[in-house]
Image (tube, rainbow, N blue to C red; front, side, top):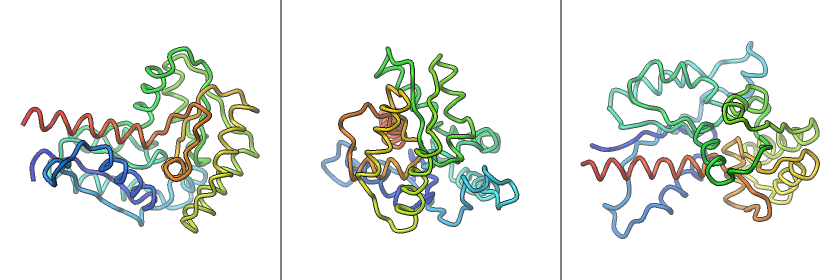
Length: 237
């Protein structure tokens, strides 16, 4: 297969399925051959990223992610996408072992905010505790002179419940809880735009869209970037 890209997924699997649904739904296709060529690596057994970032004595996901990148690089994809925000903590180490470009989801998300909301100054970030404390989004937002708005302990607890107890544990999306979390980031924390910094939150957004508040859905943005790059491959073929 030529002119394809590789998706490193399975973190978690329902969220990766959400990425694929959006990818295929947004692809302008009228026949089988109009869809894009891609390889999905659904590596469900990668150790939990947030657990490791909060406690480095726990199993690290890095060896598994490095193995995926090295293995898939032998197939020579045109680019990689990683369908997990927290995994981007290891972005530099992963990019260092391959010449294949890896799309940086947090960077693309911040770029989207600058383009769509040019007058915004305060950007909220919600996700796993690992993502909200590891600085991935902080660094990208600060580079663009944007103020980082973090969740309170209570908002983080609600977000952790939604991600781990509801979605990961039961594959259940509590739409009301999701909406409440986003609203609290705006009403209590003063965020003008809220980044969904976890693919489980993107999954929640797919099933229970929050229409009232400006949202930067990282996985949705990754889908659009994937389509943009894959389309260029076809035009250059």
